[in-house]
Image (cartoon, rainbow, N blue to C red; front, side, top):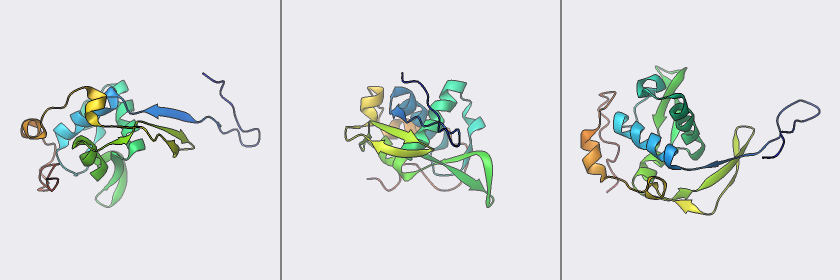
Length: 149
């Protein structure tokens, strides 16, 4: 691993970090989708995640699968929602296998892509697990996969 370097003027880290879309990320997305089932806001504490799972959850934002959201018109810490990109990835669309980040921005993405099945090695039929999901909110927005077929 290269030695961490800092800007001599401002002291900011100048490291570019590479993140690979892996099994832990995919399983956290599946777990979240099973619990939420829609695009309604939810609080991360409702996910009962371990520290590692929380880290993997936050990394999902790098691919645009989750985003911070407002509750009652105000930004509040810990509130997230699934995005249409999450829906497409869960439905089998390909996404970049890795990306590089610097200064809280994606600066490079791989041309190699992966599907959710590449990450977890399996994926139950969405109708089977969607029926077993435990929605956290009754928002009337319907199933996560509405409109995909």
